[in-house]
Amino acid sequence: MNKTATSAPSSSRSAIARHSLHDAITSHLRDMIIEGELEPGKRIYEGPLCERLGVSRTPLREALRFLASEGLVDLTPQRGASVRQFSAKDIQDMLVLIRTLEELAGRLACEQGSDEEISEVRRLHDEMLDYYRDGNRLDYYKTNQRIHSAIVALSHNESLIQVHASLQSKLKRVRFIGHEGKEKWAAAVAEHESMIQALERHDTSALVGALSAHLEHAWERVRDVV
Image (tube, rainbow, N blue to C red; front, side, top):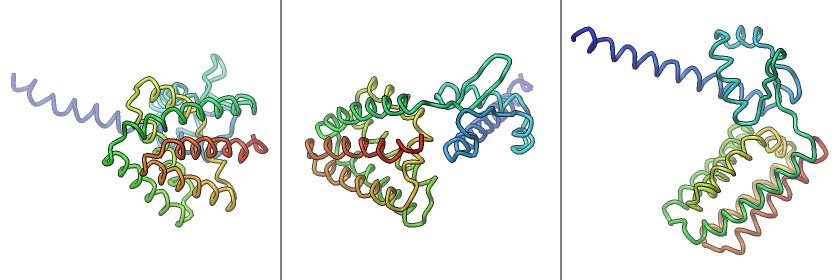
């Protein structure tokens, strides 16, 4: 009886440690893909990555399977893992769809979003601006994506939220390179400011227009480099 009681906390700590390791490896690999360190279409060699990250193959493979579920990695029998590569047509099609989803989410957000929920989106926007001023592109990008997810979450429509999240995960690298260059980055920031102001006013027409323009410009900013 006592042995069972004393072994449970140790087992729980072990499970937490494994979960934390999985999250850490997955996050690191995701960042490497977003920043282009692991290039689209290129094979992911497990040996060098294990050595670099200081982990064994089992947690690395678990992380790769998770990233495959997000649409960032392809797993091929006999060949292993590679960074998923989308065609320009794939990317344009996904951006058209995600724009349509966010336009719908914007309408619902203005109708259903509470002032408290909207103030949290503003907080994220202000955090994003801090990263912009510091020139921190990766954290800027991550916060930027959290803002888009937060606006969609204000729709309170679980099906919409899930479909949007699936598409957004596939476009992580593409959306990141859309901020390359001072002019493109500054333009994206200005578009986000318009979005947030419209949301705070519960101005449906202005928010839908700002989201639509922002995502249309997203394609214009990346079409020459994908």
